[in-house]
Image (cartoon, rainbow, N blue to C red; front, side, top):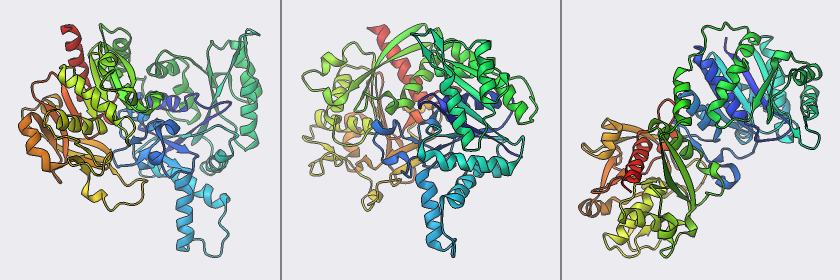
Amino acid sequence: MTKYIFVTGGVTSSLGKGIISASLAKLLQSRGYRVTIQKFDPYINIDPGTLNPYEHGECYVTEDGAETDLDLGHYERFLNTPTSRANNITTGRIYQNVINMEREGAFLGKTVQVVPHITDEIKRNIRILGENGEFDIVITELGGTVGDIESLPYIEAVRQFRWETGSGNSLVIHLTLIPFLAAAGELKTKPTQHSVKMLLEYGIQPDILVCRTEHPLSTDIRKKIALFCNVNVNAVIESIDASTIYDVPLLMLKEQLDKTVLAKLKLPHKSEPDLESWKEFLGRLKNPTFEVRIGLVGKYVELPDAYKSITESFIHAGTRNECKVKVEYIPSEQLTTENAVERLKGLHGVLVAPGFGERGFEGKIEAIRYVRENNIPFFGICLGMQCSVVEFGRHVLGLKDASSTEMNSATPHPVINMMEEQKKVVNKGGTMRLGAYACDLKKGSKAANYYGKSRISERHRHRYEFNNDYLKDYENAGLIPTGINPENNLVEIVELKNHPFFIGAQFHPELKSTVANPHPLFINFVAASMAYARKK
């Protein structure tokens, strides 16, 4: 029977439920258990696909084309296993499913209510990942903080679910905060006590408390928390601030979180955790032999979480190269023809990030022109790739006012155009080209050499594409399409001849980079940036 773990949060948001969930999953996976993690988000959007990155950070895309919370990226990067649509559920989806059933007549004669209908739908989604026998343990992270009005149906659903599944088949981990008051010079447990009290009022006794803290928890503090929160002393887990999120699995191992969980779920230890490769990764991460400065040019750089997968991919690729990648965030809307040289000089590589809309578009064009003309390694992702096509069209092919129809519908040279199947789409949410698609790589190309194979699969999130009417002109001038979708001839990758590293990818390679398998394009982009730095 599949076992279930629920992770709730208290006192304040942003304590790191996603990292704790991923770290616990990593420990259980390293003991031989098949583990997956799902995230329940209490907002009413169906998914984060229509949310501004300033609102919600990065929108993560799964293999099956679901637009999801960025925590799913952490799950995949830690576990090195793909997630799916079933791994991220929102209140919007829950209510939409119930309302659709009501319209279809599934509840004829009944009044549709939060209890039992909404809570039943939540429980159904909890069970989905555990029903097919693929996983031994399902970890469910509940978004928000205990006490939030929008979280109440999820808390009630968990209470019911635990009663229905019986003792030993599920447990609740409550992540809370032990603040340090500098004036008093001591840690305070009262916020945690109140948070647990609120959970108890909702009918849930947490089994384990994971306590975020800036200072170590003494034995006396652990005993005090255990006494007033009704848990065993060994179930009070210290989660002290770490220099990197990749330290957290080892910190949780030291605290024996995995052993405590297995004991409460009545599961055997199987074997000791095999974390040698993880430790090797951490060793290389903390002891680089080289450093490069790479500029990330984007329109949401004030919120680094908007590019979370990209920055994590740099960590993975940098570690593989034994190199520290120092990412410098550059607002694209501040780049102009006059200041581009001053803003970009001294960088060893430039990545132009994904995005939507006209704001900052011209700044990205200026950044690409500078790195192309000065042989600085360049990597363009999604809109970044499209910007490289526009820049090349304007300044090499001489196509005056070349642009994307997303930015200028009246451009005389629409080198980037809306995909044909997108032209009739009216609704915005979940209607882009989403998820994994195949791509054939041109023999002898840099991309083929980097991947080491001729066919790849990468994840997409876009509506616009390279306009194949201009394909021959670009190829003859030296910007070569080296990656093509085999079904519709969509240009997926462009490369510039006679340049140390100039690659644009229509897809999002950052979504498939993990600790165990850094993405080859990022690995080689960092390597090219290192070569440029040595040359300089």
